[in-house]
Length: 246
Image (cartoon, rainbow, N blue to C red; front, side, top):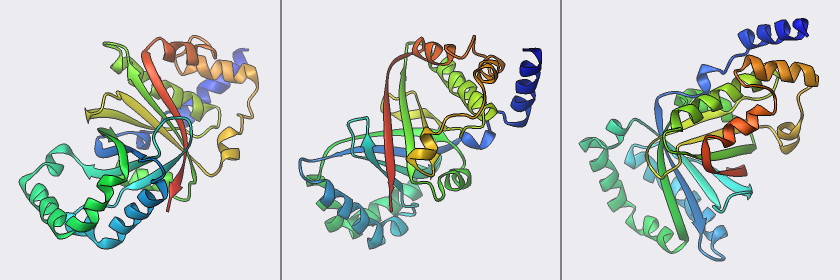
């Protein structure tokens, strides 16, 4: 057992929770539910807006769009990089978006009848270059959105980092971590990017003893405590699998 603990301590030094999985870059993350029977039209509208030149005129990078497969109630998640709240709400940026909205008013207005529900959260996340590298050529995304109990948001954020350390030590893909800056009441959410459902579901090749040691080295009481500790910090969470909309 001492050998296992020493081995896992070495793994944690080699594969800690990677810095590129979180950061101070701000994203506007919107979850959309299409009106009844309007999902296909909504997807077409999103593509039309992207092709129209609106994002170029507005000085924005087009969002990454994820389509719900199973889990939560929304149909689409749009992840738009905005860099910072100051940059997004600067006079220059707002005037540019307003001008673009006037120029593309007709196509933008078409979306109003297609969306039954929309919720926006501004969140700190990985640098844009890291986000693009992590999500490149990935087709399956595991999204977990958490509401912390009162006063528990900092501990929840740290739990997500601890779990990433465990995932890295056991040879599994770590998650990108996002923390709320403003908007909807989601305190922390994570996004794991995977090549396929099979890759996401593949278990660690390590033994139970090695996984137990990895959990303890990451700061948990034991392997089971990963789940129990998380549940002690949250009032609710939403779990979703989604694919990329090209």
